[in-house]
Image 1 (spheres, chains in turn orange, blue):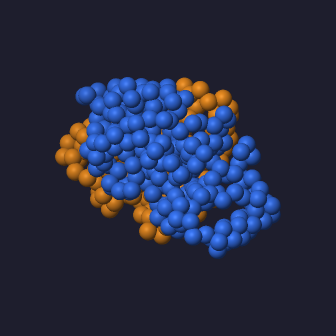
Image 2: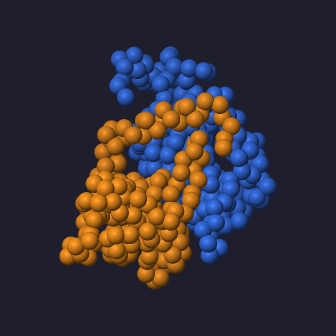
Image 3: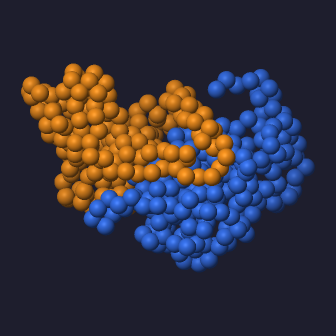
Length: 178
Length: 218
């Protein structure tokens, strides 16, 4: 993609650095909104087929009509697959599952038709990686606002999530607060 | 990320050097002061270094903006992105803005942040200006014709941004994910990938703004 000699290697080194970032990022901005920790379970916990638990549901604040939602899906048993997302048309025109892929320092985005949640494992949606992209956001989403996002899984079915809007840098995740 | 005693010493000496410089100052255009030893930066070094493009683009006021002329003598943090970007572009910009808010004027006054759109079709001067005004009104937004923006990316050794169709007339723009830091030598020896912490930004911006490029290859 880019033609900078050595940069792939260097970025690989940087990626290592990024891996350590959660452990060493300073905590000097007490004003940041902590990521919410609401937990949603399929069918309000009554669905015998629920295989996932969803936490850290958050959207970044918006600056225009583009938005992004992130959360963590934990498998509570067998594997599952996130298939789609939908949002109230009063909030945004469309919600799509996307993946930002970093290749040699370039960010390439692709729409994905589903993401696996490994048995007993977790799927993390976060900035610079998997996210639910909101297209055509109607009204500015500001920190503290909430809205509903519906996500569908292959086995667990439809799950309704209450999404809390957080400040841009807080969207990086609860373990990467500043 | 251990801090070697040598680095602490270097930082102490740096502080002394700044003090000495300041006490005999009186110069209204402060120049970066060299450090006694090379600085170990937190960003990612690149070789060969990148030249600051000698380009005239369009500012958010719709007027021509000569990048080299307008940023001469400043640490220039440059990013190529687009405003319909889900997270990489706004998060980079917000992180830099937060870091600058936490640094003293002496540092901030020597820094310019430039966001060049890779999506001039949607990012008109007005759209770009509004988006940046939410992040930091001091940040400079630049756009141009598709040809100008493509040539600008080529000058930075990037391939011109491509698009991913998202349906319904929407598209994503595939762009470089790192911020380039041009020091007063008009070169970027170092870049910042997505995910750089505010602490690392703070350290490097202060070093680069006050002392210019002081890495091993200078």
